[in-house]
Length: 284
Image (cartoon, rainbow, N blue to C red; front, side):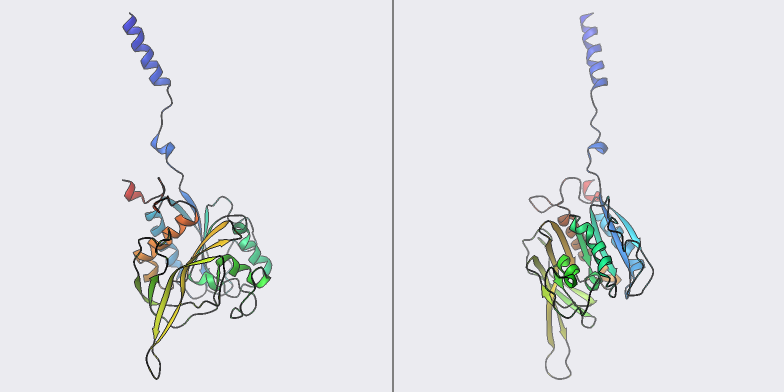
């Protein structure tokens, strides 16, 4: 009788004990808001390349806000709404709004990042939200400098589409650690008008441009960097990413993924994705 009673007690205890479910214990996916649209790029395809590439490489869900408008003032839904990133862990800016210069709208775009939501910025987002002459260096903290203070680098233009030699200048940084230098296909090399003290260059790009006379001219600028915005917000940026083939390149998608994980503080002490934030394939 005592043996039977003891067995019954064990069974009851097992039934009543809380069960740890792997699904319940797993970290929630990062929520990313991807903004695409505007002038000069195939955003209709690139938005999906980025979404699929990021979601395959990390525990992340990418929501898209997109417009097919190809003007320099694309009517993106988040313009004028300072709460557009509410509920998201990170915003990925891949829009091209070169002529959107309304200070109030620019401040609304910046509002989530001022509040501490990290940002990732790709290619033509560096040439967006400009007030006045973008080739004239801006003073940090001024109205004209708002977007550039957030990015960490002010850029005003680019040269022809030619291959760019990418050289990682900070191979110890968590974003670029272990990454190899590479040569792009034809891409646009963005200039650097001014680099903020808060920015840390990670890679430089060099183009060799043919001259009518004399040897080829080497042009070099920072193409990948991180920035500490207002002392609290992590921001990752790269000016590479004009053409679809570049955006779809595994080296490019790996870079953007690591930029997202770094910005959201999801890389561990060994600069690997924290538990539960790596690729789903790697976890199997």
